[in-house]
Length: 444
Picture 1: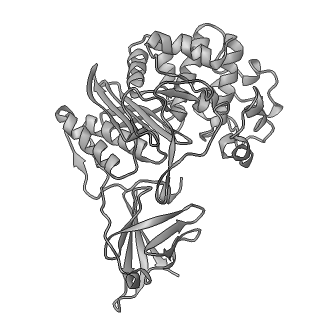
Picture 2: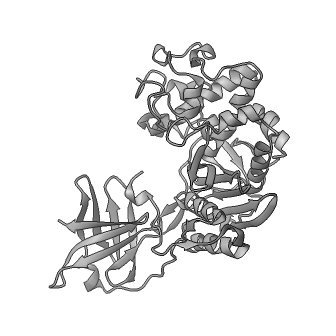
C-alpha cells in the first residue's frame, strides 16, 4: 500500500476509558468520517449483547437517494475469508480433511509445484501461491463471468513465490483454492454450504453469496471516489471472488455472526482454538489476532470494487465493531480500528474535518512542480484552472483543496500537503501529513 492510500491521523490523540464509552463518543468518530466526505455506509458497536450504536451514513443508492442503515446489504470483500476458514474447520471436524495434509490430497489436479502446500498454508497465507488479484490478466478478465475452475487456471501454473510455510504473504488465491476444496468435499456449492452450515444456524437471513443476476432487497450500490465526488465503481463479476471475497452482509448480521461464533454455536472449543492460533504476522485462520497491552482484537478488513469493510471482536470485553462502506477508501478500516480502540480504553483519534478557502490565481501559480519524498516516490503538482492537482508516483491524480495559505488537503483520502518557503518567500518544498507521519519533500 502506498502513501496516498493511507489515512491521516489527527495530531491530537483522544483517550476515552472503556467504561465511559457512549453513543455520543462513538458518534463523534463516525460523524467525522461521514463529514469528511470519505465514508458512506453503516456502523454498529455492541458490548456483551447490548447494541451501543447502530447507524447508517450516506446513501445505499446515490441515484435514488436511498439511505444506508443496519439492514443495508454491502459486499464485504475479504471478511468472507473467516467464513471460508470456519467452513474448512467444519469439514475437518467431520473427518473429511486434515489441515496439514497437502492440497493435492483433496484437489488431485493441482500442479507439482504445490506438492508441499497444505490446507493450513492456504488458511494462513503461507503457501507461496501468487495473488491472482494482483495479476494484469485478472484486471483484464474480472468484468466477464468466469466458469468453474477458471480463477485457479489464472495462477495454477505460475511458480511459487516462496517455500510453503517459510513466510506470510497475503494472497486471495489461497481462499479460491479453499473454496474448491469445500465444494469438492461437501458435494455442495460454496454458496449452499455456507448458507446451510453457517448462516442459518447463526440466524443470518441477510447474508449470502452475491449473485448479480438475483433480485436482492436492500442491496447497496458501490462507489469509488472521484475528483469531483463519488463515481460508480468499476464493474467486477462476482463469479471471481468466491470464498476469498464474494459474500454480502449487513452490520446487524455480522453481530449475529460474532455472537454465534464466539458462543461456541458453530465450532467446538478445540476448533475455535485452531481458528485463533496465529501462524505468522498476527494472521491466524481467516482472521488477524492482535494484542496490545491487555487488549486483544480479532479482526479482518475487506475491499472489493465499490465496497470496504472492517469487523472486529474483543473476546475479553465482548465488544463487536462492524463497519461496512459502499465507497472505496480507507475509512471503514480506520473507523473500525478507532472505535475498537475507544471501546478498549486505548488512544483513538477521529478524522479531521476540513473546510475549503479560496486562493488567488497568482498564489496558485507558485506551487506547480515535482516534489520528491524518496528516490522512487514523488508528488507532481500542477495548476488546473482555479485549483491544484496532485499526482503521486504510480497513482491517480487528485484535486487539492486549500485550507489556509500554503496548506491544502485531499478529499478522497485524509491527507494534507503543506508547502514550505525559503527566506525570500519562494516555495522550495512541501510536507505530506498522512497516517500520523510528516514526510518532507524537496522541490526539484
